[in-house]
Image (cartoon, rainbow, N blue to C red; front, top):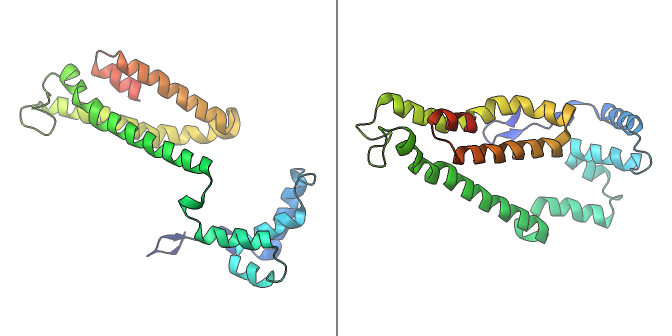
Length: 202
């Protein structure tokens, strides 16, 4: 639910739970998962209180916050990308460049040639938005392009949770997704019909 509809601020779900119940949940979680060896219970409870209501936590703990904690809270409010570590900057830059290349390759470059080869009535000068191409081929062109995003938002969304939670875990799910993407890309390179291209993109 939205806490502020105009600003689209998402409501903090922990605020609906009384602080005493939150503390009880954290203690049960700490015990059930055997976190006593590596994580201090008091630290975990304080973190939950901070996540529930930061303003109230800072007021209550004003005299108990360490320098490290105070600096972390301050940094969280004013951190920019330029203050992040070198590794984070490299990861963000790589993702940005990858997105640009993927968008250019999938939407612009790839769509310039395959309609002419596989849908005979659509050519660079007689494309899906130009007069002369058949209505059927225009629909096939649109469907073949849209199936990637349709499959990702429907089939992919339902497969994500079982893969990560039940079968192969988060890293395994990423590996499976990458493997299917790699195989599909190779298949698209050797396709000779729009049906095969459609299946590979699906």
